[in-house]
Amino acid sequence: TAPTITLTLVDNGLCTDVLAETATVNVNPLPTVSITPDTATLCLGDTASFVATGGDSHSWSPVINIIGENTATPRMFPTTTTLYYDTVRSAFGCELIDSVLVIVNPLPTVTVSSDEVICTSDTVMLTVSSEVGSTFSWTPTTGLPDPTNDTIFVSPSASTEYTVVVTSSEGCLDSAKVNITVRPEVTGSVVLASDSLCFNESGLVTAAFDAGFVPDPAGGYSFDGGVTFQTNDEITILG
Image (cartoon, rainbow, N blue to C red; front, side, top):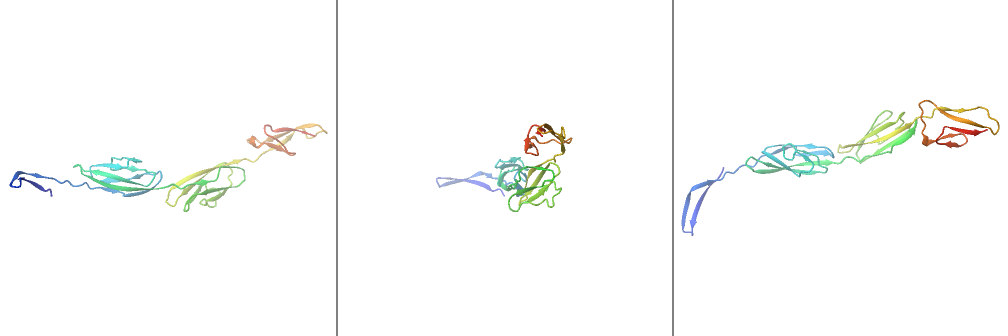
């Protein structure tokens, strides 16, 4: 109930008079506010959404990693756990402050094997490590007895990109990739210009690769006898 104030005047402590007029002070109520939820737990990089009801205007602080700081439906994406305050104002200008807590869990650290180059039918071991309590999921799963292991052995028939998704104990996810490049088997034949040589006579030997096979020049070629060359696919031998 708004109180009524009556003003009494006193002159030197002797004479008094009471003003005929009275002043009425209206006390306006504070705004009511309800925020849902009052606490949000998310992973780094995710966004938390809130809905505030009550009041006529809202002002959120700190204004860091927030969208809609002057609305009743802000979205926050802090990089660390943060307490946000909502200053709610009524139509009479009265203010009330409420708060919400946004808890940010970090992404798991992911350490995987380096990319590998193998030959057809070779097998390579891939490993992943992360914090204690993390779980793993490798893809593609073809040829994997258990794609949830931290160590897998793969023998792809073609170049393949393997992805491992790591889930932390808080439910946060991160991933990494490993590329396995598969070199095809050498296919072809050795062609002799002549299958008969006289003593001290030279002859040409050519490496003839099957259609579609492209050798890796960095690997070089070698014939029996230890002769190795990089930029040609033929040598001359001495009979």
